[in-house]
Image 1 (cartoon, rainbow, N blue to C red):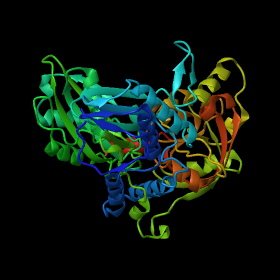
Image 2: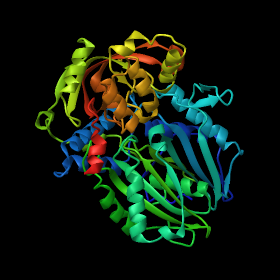
Image 3: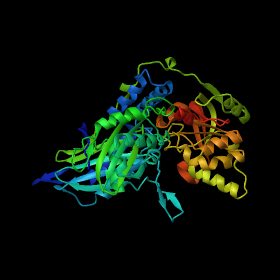
Image 4: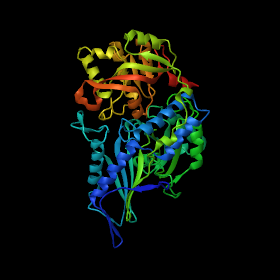
Length: 521
């Protein structure tokens, strides 16, 4: 079911492939090498078309200043990541492989194992984070320590080639995949557009826009629909031929793109570039069902095609010199307005500074911050429930929700972008009532629970740019060390020192929320 548009490919070095009597004999080493090179490449390089779209945001005279700032950060991030040391995103993602084996391709039947070895080699030898947790029981788990298992989906097709799509899918964008079981009544343009606009706006910005959006209407099952969503978001159905088995509607794509980009959310902090493009796929359906799937590929758009043919093994050519897309402009000419905040003063003074701001204002942070995310927050709650005191470090510094990638030799930290703020919403009021977590930093919109907690407890939530983790590590973090829960690996508690770290006030202590204000307009 792979129907990508034509792409440029480059050969990779691997074991010999034999083509004999019309059959292609592929040794296991080829699959291992192909997977390793694929995940190495998409951890550091992006497609040229994607970079061109990001540059277009910067050049758009109607783009908001916040969008132009974000676009420049994304381009700088691509440039830093292309050095092959810091990956594009701290969340190196779940390793996903879709493969189609031609009937004339001969293997030992162990492709899944060989691909898994290649995935493991990439994640264990490069500066990539391990994000996969494996179950010990229904309630207990541990990190796999290798980012395995990967999701490997192999099917049969006709021909003498083995074709692949490799995807590194981060948790933020994966979590914004939705399935809605609807009815035939929705199959008219006005109702369908209205439905999609409402549901797409609810995706919000926590999955790192600007997005490549995919909408799939129909499907013979829920899993068929959502698989097509994943493929479409990776541009793997761009050349889908119109038939009784499915079609692509490019006219409706253009119309939907124009309408959803009017929601005001923009490229994370307001504007007109919420989505870069849209793919709409229509599939056959059971008469009693109308599944509608919606999903996104984030601004760290990590997808690459591969193939094994009688001529060898090949990977899609990504952009290895993204500096070509950087604008020739001095940053001093950009809008750099914002208050510089010294985090190393008494905490009450930092709170007083934030109290003077309006939601949407930009700040530049200097000093120490605590880094903690999901499991650490669960442990903080457990301490309160057990009647034990919270660590003092939670009460005197901002809390940055993040989990770093591996630290390269000679650098302060690994790639270090924010994680989705919403996953910590249920902890906020409890922690704030115990004097902790009064200043939070992360990515994305938050629930009313957080707005009320900040108003009642005098707290603040600041948004930082998601999708620029290499730039964050290289440009803004000067020191990083683990200070608690070392057993949690990347989910441990860290102390970082930042310099001119950009952030935007999104929720204040007066009940104001930046994103709700935008959507009301």
